[in-house]
Image 1 (tube, rainbow, N blue to C red):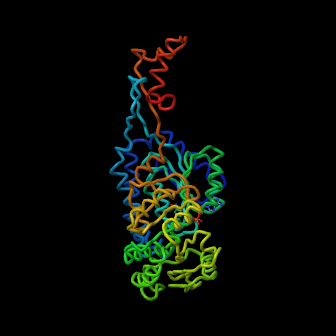
Image 2 (cartoon, rainbow, N blue to C red):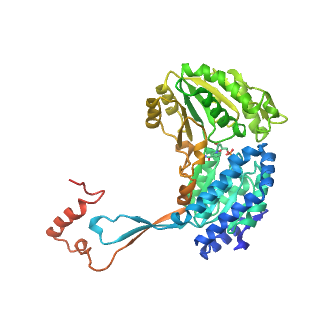
Length: 478
Ligand code: NAD
């Protein structure tokens, strides 16, 4: 099996050959046993623990991530996902009993999770380790072979993954590259495509997948709003917002994108935020080892363009093209129609808008695409319930930001423009499995006789009573 693990420099026929090699390996059945899956998960674990320093250095090179941040949001996140999978794998793999309706008894019904085959995982640059390896944990736990395509925009991490992964796991190939390579990959037939990134490319992936009717998981982004009112614990809210927004310099899919504050909350939030920014990153965040940089010049220019649109600066606003540094920035009174309120910010700029109350906030949110996450800082139970009942988002978090990703039992994924499908924990296992329905019925007594032809009015009457009354679709319990 080791022979199928490969990191490659692209040649014409190589990608089809790699996929064919992985498919042949999958067909041997070698990836199915629990022992093989555990070996891969342990292999991934030892990759992370053996090469921690090299990973930290790569993340620093790509995004100037600090050591602690790399552990909290990248290495630690994958380790936790691996350990969770190792702990629960036996239970996840077990056939799941399903109840059989009276009219079909005696019979046993079971749901058997089975691996899908060869999966493609396409990852983005912003959490280049986690977003490549976390889906892989699910794919391997579910007994699949996989092709992994890290992001070319995080080249140091991509190269490290390509050089290390084949040494630690079997039936996994790493293909590095950009549009050309990904396009070639998407021409192949896979059994599942797991894509994380922006919605424009998400559509390209979905269209390519449709050609082969390949199921896809699309982990996309968008604008994740924050609602805050005067009942919030303002000091804690400001800290949790500052952390969520300025981690990785705001380049996080679930970063709070903008704030909707009630009039009574707005002023105290605006005076708390500059203070918490100073507490976390010092008087000059440029010198903080905990503050990252913008990934490339294109994104730097896009973000400074957003700053140039105007609005009142409450904090930050400073930038340096040389270093691709943008200070943690808080804005209010952004001009009507400004791009900062129409496109995903994906950088360290936090607009704070005022809304009358939670109802206006709900209308504002519902007039836009369904977000990946919604955050609400409020102790008002009615407001919390209204946000839960009247908005739709991938996830909803009260009094914190981003930490729902750390709960493996919560499926993580978007809805509408923020994506489709989900993963993490058992949801990952199920995403990369086919849940096969298996029914077994004894032949004697032949309790199905009644439904065989020829039918008589007596048998019809009996069937109507016995079948339709208990049938979930055809009949109603009276
Ligand atoms: P990116 O530019 O790294 O692209 C993602 C992947 O798509 C890369 O591997 C890239 O090579 C590939 N790609 C790019 N253009 C392509 C094309 N034309 N055809 C085929 N493949 C192509 O990352 P990005 O898209 O800039 O990532 C940022 C976006 O991703 C944001 O919108 C963010 O919200 C979202 N995101 C979502 C999640 C999530 O878990 N939901 C996580 C991180 C980022």
